[in-house]
Length: 152
Image 1 (cartoon, rainbow, N blue to C red):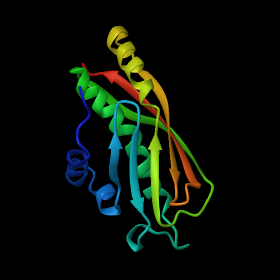
Image 2: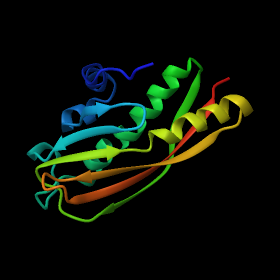
Image 3: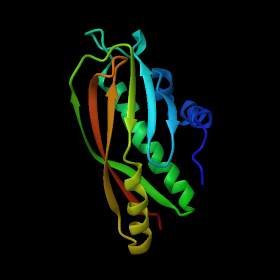
Image 4: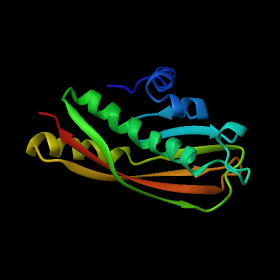
């Protein structure tokens, strides 16, 4: 099954994740293996140091990982819950301009879902999202530990 259109995902964001939408987080590309989202530094999402607030970067980064997990769950046809159990981040450069976050860990999701469906036990996967500026310089790297579990 193919992933939903970026338009539909961004419309979903407006209604279900309004803080991310108002901060400017937008999905630009997604397939089963990769998701790309952008967010632009603006007055609305800045910190006192005139760069993008770390939490806005975190929303965009988490979005690239979570949208692939939620889409895979929807495509499985099963009732499966998902939750971030842990995360960590590294900030390596001031985030100004348009920041593009990419996650290429979608290949990890199918195995975790298969195992949780087969065993009934929760599974965890770590997924990384890397944010780069317009010059393709890494500004931040986020890691999210997603848990998936069958709903009863």
